[in-house]
Length: 206
Image (cartoon, rainbow, N blue to C red; front, side, top):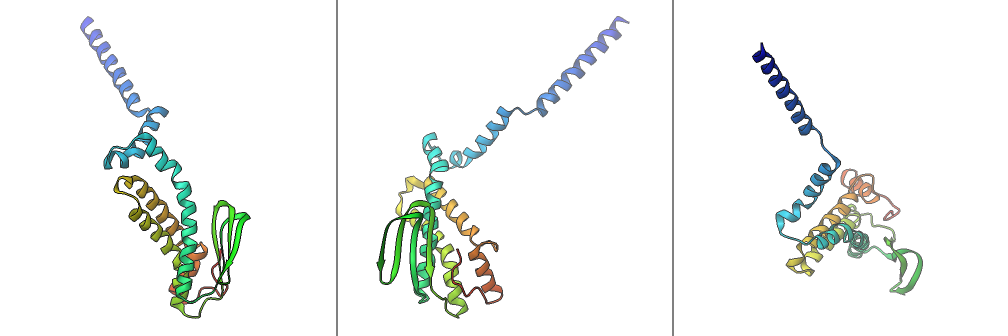
C-alpha cells in the first residue's frame, strides 16, 4: 500500500513538472520578444561583418532621412533630364518648400531654393509631345533618377562604406517602387502609357 502511494506521488510530481515545463516553453516575455526582434534586425550586420553599434544606429535610423530627401530631388532631376532629351520645355525647378531662400532664372528656367528641404523637389514642365515613347521616357525618368542616385553613391563611396550604401540602395529602390504603384501620379501615367498608349495632357502631375 505504501509503495502504491509513493508511486502515485511520483507520478503526480512528474505530471506537475511536465506541465510547468510546457508553460515555460509556451510563455514568451516582452524581454524575449525584444531580444528576438533586435537579433533579426542585426542579422544583416552580423552576417556581413562586424559593425559598431554607433555606426549601425546612424546607418539605420539617421541616414534614411537625408536619403529620402536626396531621392526626392534625384527623382525630379530624372524627370528633367529625360524631358531635355525629349525636347520638353522646363519652366521651373524648385528644391524644398515654403519661403524661398534664393531664386534665379537661367535660360528661361526659374529656379527656387526653399528652406524646407524635407519637402523634396518639384519640376514644372511644359506640354509633353504626342509621342507615346517620349512621354513614357519622361514619366519613367523619375524612377530612373532614383536608381541612378543609388548607383552614384556606390561609385562615390569607398568599399568600407558598404553598410551605408546598402541603406541608400534600399531607400532608393523603395522610392522607385513607390512611384511605380498605379495609385501614384507617375505610376498612373506609366501604366496608362504601357497598356493604353495614353497618359495625361497636363504634363507631370505632382
